Image (cartoon, rainbow, N blue to C red; front, side):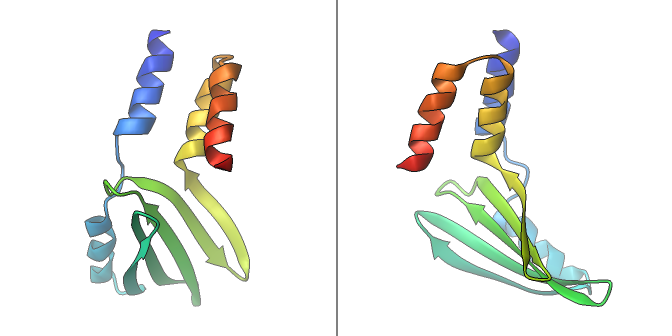
Length: 111
């Protein structure tokens, strides 16, 4: 139970990237732009950078506390999810056979 609690606490309360971190990327010459828009109760940061001569877009979704919720990258008309906080929480719940909590998480996603 302690491992479950520790893993969930880390996923829910720790934040690996902040909106200000995205702005710092502009010091790298391969980053072309960083723009923010409101998204639900938080922010969506759109980054455009060049990799191997191609412009790539990445979208960073933050909640109202500026905690990262999801990161998506679009390259060659293909969207890849790089991080999804809800999916990570669900994986932990399934790992510890906490199916009831997993079902509740799914209901929150469907709302």
